[in-house]
Length: 335
Image (cartoon, rainbow, N blue to C red; front, side, top):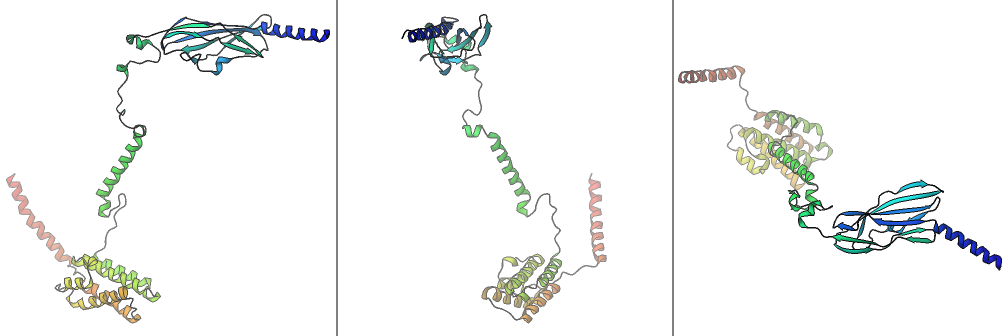
């Protein structure tokens, strides 16, 4: 029993010796503080090397309801004699409410022991309106710059450049459409030179023959393309909007035309048979398909515009030039 009591006593003495080797102190650099400004609590710890300690206030943001911890600068550790360390560090505090406050003791834990500092008293002084510009964190109203987009929602003001790019793209597209696309032109791509009506019709008829549509059982597609060639030709050659007209309307428009009078019957038979094939699912005989093709060639060839001899064209141009010379001389005289 005596040995057990002696052992316990030695352990208690040793533990008390370890605890007694830690010195923990805290003090304010000023007992008064201007509201909104910052002050420092200076902490000093002396302890043996190898002893680990923890400041409880490192895990909280406030010391009480009115005083908050604004910053925690890095500690300064110094090696002193007798195998000991001296640790100095600060807690930066701040308050935005005036009054007299008693701060709770700071706590420093080593093992199972907790060391407490003395209670600190802090008086927070109110701030006059004229001195707000000297207080940390305040900015006078008159110095705040006016922002043009303060009244605009943030999802617009934050991404204004995106809306600007979209607007420019829309305006560019509108410009391209009004200048080129609505006229059937494509910018940066040279417009293909259009053939005269007769040459275009003959070329398309030759292409139609090479497709062998009616030979492969596609009579409807054959007559659709054949009549389309003739309608476009009539439109360009005679100025008759045949593309949008019915068969009877086309024939009425061409009945008084001297150029087409000799071949109107052939054109009428082509268009009427094509209507039966397209709308009544009629299947003509192979000979009829070939006859309609030959009649189309005849109609285009018979209505081909007459070419003037080159001599007449040159004489006409010279006559126009001679007629313009007196006008030029008269202009010079008036000048």
